[in-house]
Amino acid sequence: MDRKKLFNVIDFGSSKIRFSVFDLNLNEKYSESKKVYINENFQNHFETINEIIKKAEKKISLHIEDIILILDSAKLFTIDISLNKNLNQNTKIIDVYSSIILELNQLISSHYSSYNLLHIIVDKCTIDNLHSFTEIPKERIISNNFKIDFKLICLPKNLINNIKNKFIKYNINVINIYCTSYIKSQTYVKKINKSKVSFLEIGCERTTFIFYEKNKLKFIQTIPIGGFNITKDISKIFNINKDDAEKLKKSFNRSYTEFSYDTKSSDNEMLVKEIINKNISIDKLKKVILSRVQEIIDLTFKKSNIKQYKNILSDTELFLIGDGSLLFNDNSFYLNDTFDFKSINFYAERDSLICNCGLISHLNNFELPKITNKKQGLFEKFFNFFSK
Figure (cartoon, rainbow, N blue to C red):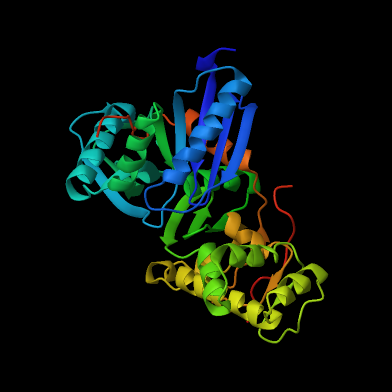
């Protein structure tokens, strides 16, 4: 097997490492996922990655040197920016575009020096103040003026450098880095094929809201609260350790439980047994989970810069993704919803599919800035989620 025709993708999650090997035809050759403990220096992450890679090398009989890395952060930062070029002669857009990208990178380096630019997304371009496009028409001719509206996705430079340097110590070359929530949503929105689609990804320590219109990214925002915050609340309120609290929370996954302030105890035998053994009130536990979920929703959707989209979102289908959203699968939550989404759906994800999204982004990546190492069932079902 030719090593050059294989691609290795690592999803560097806060609480889970996903690793997959694909060939040029996107066929999966190897895949493995492992839970990791959250810590500041990522020691457990890299010990786990080292174990997975050694096992993969034996399985595929090849030495793994290069990886495509996908990761997310609660400190995700987005920028909307417009650049304008005035020309004195007829010029092909393709000849102007590269200089605009160079200028864009220089602006980010000068004014946002603490961030790494991961994704450059064209929102709209206008030629000669007359013709507008949502993609770059590279063969078109500009006579006078060319304006492009960009959306940029950045992650903290210290986070990126820290992770890249640790990979170097393990003799792994990171050939490119992408934002997980964005590249996943890019793939999913094409599969869903709806005019307006939103995603709410509930991760371990963050929640990300993403909105698309006609397959174009319109909005992305992250808050530093996720599923692990529910676990910490359970641990604190019921005076149990975090491992037991996490198991208790996950026991509700696909449990067909109704979460509201008026519901009585669940008839789920497994849940009742688990909770009685810990001398915990099931109704109180459900209310703790419900309250924290409501807080995550409120903090996500009550940000001032989301409010401008309220009228648009009222006719939008919302899909729940991320490991934290498993709590919503087959359960019913009754929360306050000020956006009146058209529907709320759970989107089933597979670990290898997430890595596959990273590879697709890499193969389609002709214009995004490269990051080099230097020493420094579509969805399970519809269900009720919000009610007024």
